[in-house]
Image 1 (spheres, rainbow, N blue to C red):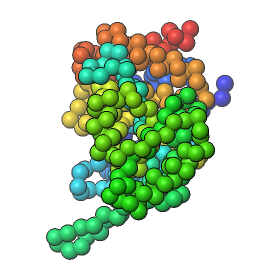
Image 2 (image 1 turned 90 degrees about the vertical axis):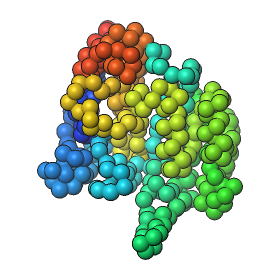
Image 3 (image 1 turned 180 degrees about the vertical axis):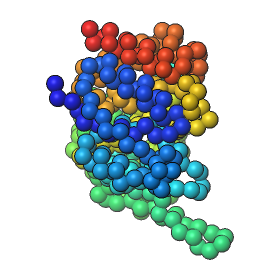
Image 4 (image 1 turned 60 degrees about the vertical axis):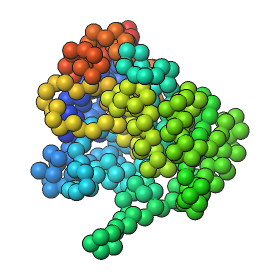
Amino acid sequence: MNAHAVTCIPGDGIGPEIMSAARAAIAATGVAIAWDDVEAGAAAVEKSGTPLPQAVLTSVRRTKVALKGPVTTPIGSGFRSVNVALRQELDLYANLRPAASIPGVPSRYEGVDLVVVRENTEDLYAGVERSLGPDAAESIKIITRKGSDRIARFAFTYARREGRRKVTAVHKANIMKLTDGLFLEVARKVAQEFPEIAFEERIVDNMCMQLVQKPELYDVLLCPNLYGDILSDLCAGLVGGLGVVPGANLGETVAVFEPVHGSAPKYAGLDKADPTALILSSVLMLAHLGEHEAARNLFAAVRSVIATGKNVTYDLGGTAGTRQMGQAIADEADRLRG
């Protein structure tokens, strides 16, 4: 069996601990991975003077696939976001964030099954800003036809492949008539090429209310960058929080899989962090690698361990540590593998 080459970016804070749990769970599926370990984030700054050394980009470009833990980015100052830099350097234009209810995860809702498809390289979130003097600053919102077209096609292609029923384009074109107007115009045009997929439009503020009131009505949400960032956290809240939600950043040739949550440095080294989100991101990675049976087994293992409630971390109502929960998931994945 040939091993899949995958770049491993453990990250910092709780990153190394949950990465260790994820790698044990992946190994239990029987899929052979040739890991290339590289550092990014705070640890890399200390050693290389940059949070994103060239060695990281070189490795990901070579392997085409990376599993990444969370990295610390100071708010409002300090070094550039590693996540944003990776997306822009590798043209990872599509951000995929599923949010599905898991039995055993505390939540106000049941039966939620949503996927946020977020454009990943432009819009306000791209960070094109300038100072207008000591008392004002300006941020530039850039929406392009190319960027809108490829993310819309990604959303509809994903919906078709995964048997999803509907794509909802999220916008604020009633106010931002040129930028969001262009995004919406392109989404409408692409929708015509996928007649079997229902298409609808929602203004972003109304979308927030709709998701809180009746999330069961929605399926795939097609969003510009900033709205997608905000709505994906809202959707995570519907299913129990950021600790149980995976993520993927996808380009034409390269894919980076990572949890949605942050690095939680205050919990670093305490063996308390929930590894679920990174392990579920590993499920997405295995499916991307064509290891669909292994992905199904690992997904089922996560759900089984959480539903049983015996070997889960404190946030899920248990007393297990990161290692114990990760090992329980690995043991279940090994059992399902037969």
